[in-house]
Length: 82
Image 1 (spheres, rainbow, N blue to C red):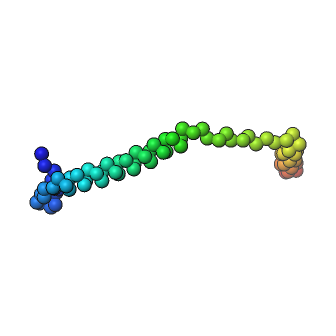
Image 2 (cartoon, helix red, strand yellow):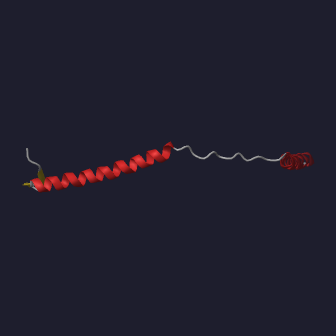
Image 3 (tube, rainbow, N blue to C red):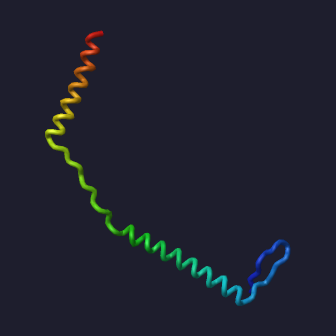
């Protein structure tokens, strides 16, 4: 069986050396792809660093709640004035 290369209407036979060169180049390309894939898989198996939870102090929550109550009081007073 011979490998042929299509060039328009005519077909050109490749030499054994040409076929070997193409095979070697293809193996090199696949080796590079497989290495990159293996590196990505290895990196993805590592556990990501745990995300620190942000904690709010009781005083901070109280300030936010007081501000919310003040906003709603303002809305209610504006509604009652109409």
